[in-house]
Amino acid sequence: MKRIFLALFLLSWTLGAASQNVALGEKTPDLKVKSWLDDRMPVPGRTFLLVFFHSTSRPAVESLAHLQELGRKFGDRVNVVVVVRESPEAVDGIVRPYAEGNLTVAFDDSGRSFAAYDVQYLPFGVLVSAKGRALWMGNPRQLTEAILDSNL
Image (tube, rainbow, N blue to C red; front, side, top):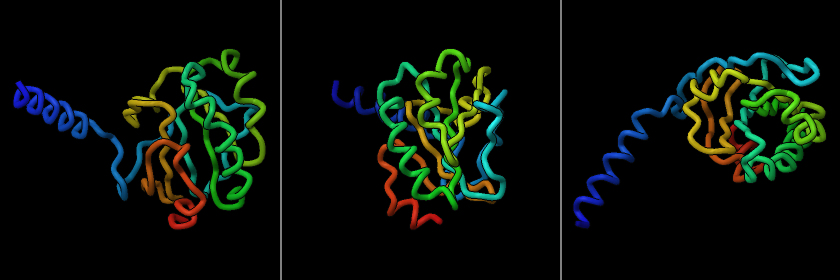
């Protein structure tokens, strides 16, 4: 029974890894969004942190303050882009208090960017170089200033 469980676990882990659409050092998919909160788009030519978000994800909501702080500290070098798969009306009261400086909110109503990045959990973050390559990915609540510094 243990061997069957182990075999199923390894198979599911392997298939999950095979479906990964983002690999460190590789080119990332284009960000495909419908609109931006208050039409505020990120500054072109900078490294950016994409954070996939949904208002029903408690960890995602709790990550907003951390993202805002990172945006304040690294605002001259990193754009923080919160990607939402909900309508602007559904999340306005949640995300608007954090949308300042270089923290912008993108609305991916159709889920195209979520699918392109194969988002499996929330919040999910990808640090993308100005040249479009993945530098770091994971839970953005674990993204530290030291990690950002080492990738900039």
